[in-house]
Amino acid sequence: MRRIATVILFCLSMLGMAQPPGDFASKKANLEALERMWNQAQVNRDASAIAGMISDHFINTEFDGQVSDRAKFLADFGDPKFNLAFMNIGNLEVSMYGTTAIVVGDYHTKGMNKGKPYEHFGRFTDTWIFLNGKWMCVASHSSLKK
Image (tube, rainbow, N blue to C red; front, top):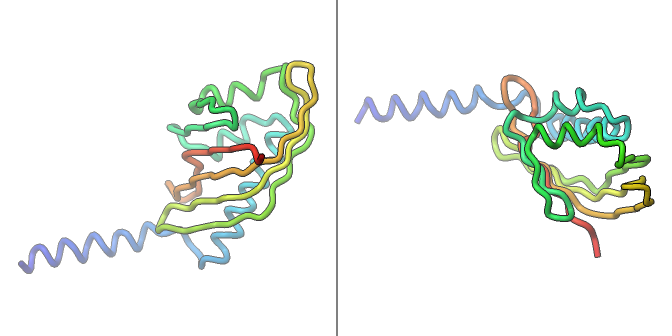
């Protein structure tokens, strides 16, 4: 029984050491800043900046239901048929679950796709984990507002 209690205490202490540094307010500010840097990288077509923010097993689900893995998501930045001219996010909500964070918010985008202008208003949900000393997005989902 003592051995089991020791193992449980050890595991709980390891969980505490795996926590990202800072209080909720600083974690929230960090995640919001990452979301804004992500958007700027998308407008600038900077796939390398995004690559540093997403995990190796990243999954993206677009507003139209298309699902892409990390490789396809990054490759899409080079697609000449798609030109994102504007992206803004707002109404961000951050929920923390240990070393996992869920960021939900509104987005507004404008651009050209296959020669046709578009403008989208929607919602997104990003799932971040604190991995190897930094936040990494593991999943992203967006949907259009009606």
